Each structure stands twice: as C-alpha cells, then as structure tokens.
Length: 391
Image (cartoon, rainbow, N blue to C red; front, side):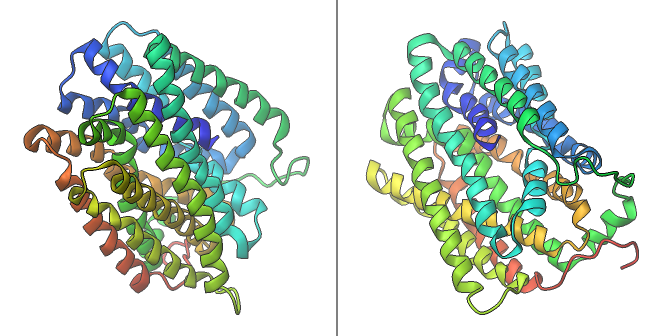
C-alpha cells in the first residue's frame, strides 16, 4: 500500500516538467499543483481514521486505495489544469487513512519490542514507491507521455485493493465486537495536554515538511543542479530512495538493539528519534555541493535517517498511547497537524526558487527545524499518553 501510495505521488514530481510545459505553469504554480493533493489529505486524516477505528483496516484499506487509484486514472485523462487539480484533491481523499491503516496493523500484529523496526520496514515502502514511481515514470514519460504513466499506476492500485480485501483479516474477525465510539473532543484535548504527544508531534511536523519538499521538488532540483534530463533525474532520484530505504532498515534495527539491549522501556525510543532526525538535518549541507556524487550521498544519507526517524517516532506513538483501540484516530490527529505544515513545503519552495533561483534557503530551513525537533523529543517524550478527559 505504501509503495503504491508513494509511487502515485512520485508520478507527479517526475511528470511536473512535462505537465508544466503542457499547461504553461510557472515555478510558483507548479508548487501549488504539487501540494494540491494535500489539501483534502490533511483535512480528512482525522475523519478517515475515526472510521478506520470503527470498521477496521480491511474495509478502509480496500476502499481508500480503490478511490485514489480511480483518481490516478482520471488524472491521465484530463484536458486542463483545473480538471487535473480536482483529480489530485480526490487522490488526497483516498490517501488520507493510509498511515492510520499502517499504524493500526502494526499495533495489532507486531511485538512491542520490534514495533520500531517493523514500522521502519513498513515505511521503506514510501521510498520504494518513490523510487519505482520516479524511474518507471521517467521512462514511461520518455516513451509514451505522462498520461499513460498515471493510467498504469491507477490500474496497479485497483488490483491491490481487490487483493487486500481477499487476503487481510482484522484480528477480531468472526468475534462479536462491542460497538466502538468515535474519539471525543475531550480525548483530543487530553492528547494536547500530554508533553509526550507534543514532542512526537514536533518531530512528525518537521520530518513531514522535508519529506514533502523532497517528494515534490527533488527531480527538478537534480535537473537544476546537475543539468541532467528527465530520465537521468529519475534514475538518480530512484537510486537515492533505494539507498535510503536499505540504510533505514539497518539503522532502525541496530538502534533498537542498542537502546533496548537490557530491557524494554518505550520512552527510550526517543533517543533513536533524536539521533535520526539530527542525521536527517544533514540535508542542510546540500548548498555546499554542486557535483553529482556528493549531492546524491547527502540526499541518500538524509533520507535514510528521515525514514528511520519516522519509523521510530511512529512506534513511539503506538507504544505510549494507553488506549490501543484509538491508535488510528490518534495517528489521524498527528497527521492532520503535521500535514498542515507539510503541505506548505512545495508551495514555500516554489516561492523560494522563483525569487532566488536556488533551493538553498529551503534546505537550511529544514535542517534547523529537524535539529530543534530532535531536542524537543529528548526533553518532552517521557510518559504514557493518557486520553481520558481531564487526565
């Protein structure tokens, strides 16, 4: 699911030069187009995950992927930029519960001491999807144009939706369940009274910002810095994503073994988070390099640390939330706020590039924010997250 989700997101980033030329878009307009799916995505993170907690990951997973895959199909058939923006908004509607589904499955099925590494492996699907979507999209665009790229990715998603419905079962399938009530306003307010939740949210916001910036602009950044064509940019972008995915699995697993070598104490996972987001801050070194090898190494290392940080931070959330039946909605709350910041990344970067002609300020901003978030995680994340009203 994560591979398909991020493959569909990467489809736009690699198609952006061709799409921008076809519809005569400026850099600022391309930034707005890149962020368009996030408008509905972040608004529906919480509502969709509330439904997820009530009906389970089987139904929500199938419906969500089928919906966003239909959006991809329609995206390949549009005639103007207004129609294309509508399909991106529909894509965001479908993708809204994606991370809630993942967090729910991990909470239900993974051993507590392994949740961090399991979540990191799951999140490598993001990078594999970005790599596959970028390199496949580059060659499809070169041979057939960007429209066929969108249509083929939509078909893949529809196949997955059918397979998920046939294969996956919720843990309590076949057992009479008590009716589940939606998360209450009081429980949400209790979340924000928790120092631990605030620390986790700070990390999620900063890493989402960098993630969406890279996802939206990296192919164009490589074209700008390395003077390569779309195919060359797609290949190099894919290599960065693949190297990052492989490295993140190793980093996440080794870090868990070191931190939990004596006993399992979930709040200690914050040290993994802090170390990894600090490593991701190496993205701030990019303005100092202008040749292929160092740029690709910095990007790969930063993304590797970013994935490992995301996996550890998400596992920290699943560990510390006392009411496990609410994990989908809690993930939705987290993503609503973090994605509201993340959706600004493509837009702000578009303005930066438009006015300065370079990406430097964007990288410096991300690096500083990541370091601050790592410090907040160490200081704030210590206690379980209690969601009882008045707790």
